[in-house]
Length: 378
Image (cartoon, rainbow, N blue to C red):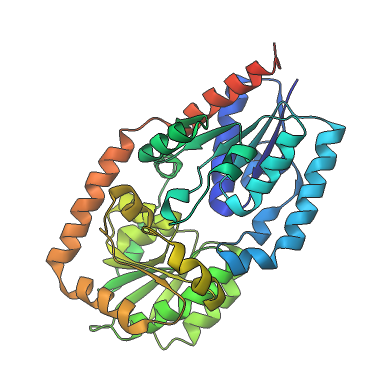
C-alpha cells in the first residue's frame, strides 16, 4: 500500500488536489490519501485530519491572525506522520502554511512535492532558502520560473497551469448564460474572491466603482463559497445597484458579461479563458500594505505576470481608491477598442497556455517517480 499525505489550504488548491488524486489513483491502484483539504478531495478518498481551507489567507496581517490554526494543523500532521509515515507528502499552493509544513516533513525524513511554486520573483528582496528547506521537488505553473529554480539548484518541473485543465472539464449551462444575457447591457461581472477577508476588503471598492459608471451596468455578482452568501446578499441589497447574485457560476458570468471587476487570483485566469476584459483589484489591510507594498517587484494579476507586462489594469491597494478603479472600468466600458485589445491579448495567452503540458498528468508522473525513489509500491 502506498500512503500519500496531501494538503491543500484554499478552494483553488482543493480543486487541484482532487484532480491530482484522481490521476494518482489511475497510476497507483493501492494508494491511500490522508491530510488537509475540502469536500472535492474527500470525494476522491481523502481522510481529512484538519481543514485549513477555512483559515486560508493572503498577505502579512491575514496570516498573522491565523498562526494558532497553523500551529494546530502542524502538530496534527506531525502526529499523523509518526503514527503512519507517508511515502510522499504533497503540498498545494498556500505558501504561508506549506513552507512550515514541508520543512517539518523533511526534518522527519519525508519527501515533499510542492505544486504551484512560490512567486518569490515578484518580490524585490527574497531568498530561496525556505523553499530549498521545505520541498524536495517543486511543480511550476509558469514556464519562466524554471530558470530561477535551476540556478538555485532546487529540483523542479514545469507542468503547466492547472486552472485551464479544470475549466476544460466544466459543463457550463447555456440556459443560464442566456438568462444572464437577457438583462439589458451593459453587464459587469463582479468577482470579489472566495476568502472572507478579501471579499470584505475589496467588495466595497468594487461596488463603489460600479456605482459611478455611466451608463449604469447590471451586476452579475459571484458567490464562490456558501459561507459568504449572506454577506454578499446584504451588500447587494444595500448597494443601490441593479444585479443578481449567483452561486459558483463564474464561467457563465464571465461569458455573459461585457467586462469584469475581479480580485487578484485564479479568477483572472478564468477571465483570460473566457475572453472577458476587466480590471483587477486587491485591497489589503493598511498594515500589510505598508510593509509589503515596497517589496513587490512585479505585477499581482496572473495574466500580467505571465505576459511580463500589464495587459489588464491592476490595483494593489491599502486604501479605497474608488476613483482610480472606477476610472479604469469607465474607460473599458466606453472604449470598444480597448476591450477588443484586451480580448486579443487574452486569446494569445490562452493559446500559449493550452499548448503546455497537462498539469495533473505531469504532476502525477513526478509523484510516482518520487515514490519509486523511496522504494514504495515495488
